[in-house]
Image 1 (cartoon, rainbow, N blue to C red):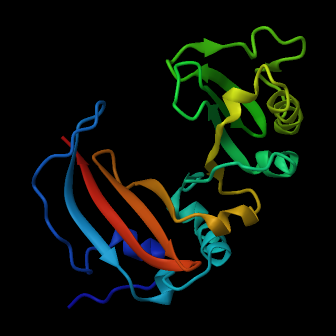
Image 2 (tube, one colour; image 1 turned 180 degrees about the vertical axis):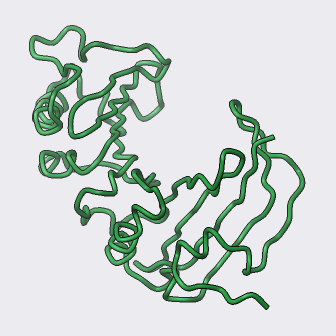
Length: 222
């Protein structure tokens, strides 16, 4: 039997672990993708099982180049306290805020190199700045720290406060430092391109503050 090399990278690249084949297509438009296999692992510290949130994050940082990993999607990373947003926002690439019920005017801000790359509504409308009626709105190209300062001010105003009922820091920039608030999250995920035709979708799940299992969906372009 072929020897399995240790570490998360080998887990993603190899097929020496058991794989449950699934020929039913999972369609994403675009492109069309089909799940061709699934790897689930719940033992092995070399893969990260049993590590704390911070230990797992640092492991992903060490493997960042080999995994070609820039961004980490964080599930359920809701922002409840804006007091430390000036320290937290520069660690992320994406913030979204909206009313609890969800609206077309919910705002998505994408940042690159700690500056605003794009602003848009949930309905897809691109914006040059937000809010449109503010004297000192958030602009494209603005630094993440300046954005944080403005968001703190806006969410304190009655006029804009409803749009911050549900605020999420969804995409973590892996090269940036760890955010201690991630200790409260239950799942992270990322995509890893294997070839032009194949991609791995990797889900890291936590229980009681430690990695409990890693699930990898092996996807192929149709």
